[in-house]
Each structure stands twice: as structure tokens, then as C-alpha cells.
Length: 142
Image (tube, rainbow, N blue to C red):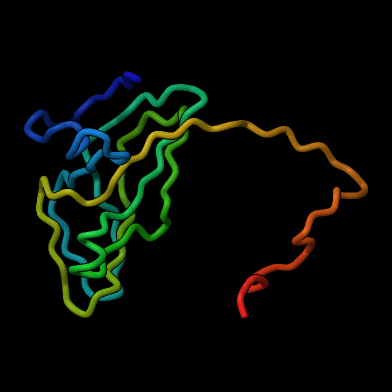
């Protein structure tokens, strides 16, 4: 699948897969940002995409940043709708104990492009039964 992309700064690479077969394109910081413990911040990527109708982009955390520094995507997964044409920005939070500086060009998140199905809700008086029923949070635990 080809997706039209535009960079605000040609000195930064387009998002790319690190290895053949990877699911996520690496998103990079377009400018540096320091996050104090407990602080959140929006990191611009300098990239704009034209995701095709019937697809969406999901922004997911990078496991290395989470493990080493406690940095994660606050609204994981972040959702990019097909109609959005603005700059992709990533909302990060520092759950770690130390300040973390993300440098320009550093990989900060992953972008997964997924097909989506638009549902049409049909109101009804009664839902069909299931083996789970109305059991909610923690209902499968011990």
C-alpha cells in the first residue's frame, strides 16, 4: 500500500520500518523535548500523511523507551483518522523517576496502518445472549 507523505523538514527521514516484516513505522521527534517525571508533552514529527479511506493510523509506544525510561504514549493507541492531513504529533508521558530528554531525530513511537470497518448500529430492545453475558471488569479472574 502506498500512502502519500509530506515532510516539513527534509533533513528528517520519513517514517520507516526498522526491519522487513515489522508492523510499525518508526516515528521520530522533529524537535527536542525534556519530560520531567510525571510530565506529559506533545512531540511533533514533522510528517503529514494521506491515509486512505477505510484505514487508520495507530500510534503505539516504543518498548525500549518504556523499559529504559518509563516513556509511553499517553493515549495509546493514538488514532489518526483517514481524513486528517495535519502534522502527526505524539502525546508522551514520563512514568519514570528521572527527567528524559528526547533528541531531534530520535525514534519516539510506532505507527501501524490498519484497515477499519465502519459499523452501522441498529437499535434493538434486546441483545442476543452470549456465554459471558453482562460480566464486566475482572470477571474472568480468580
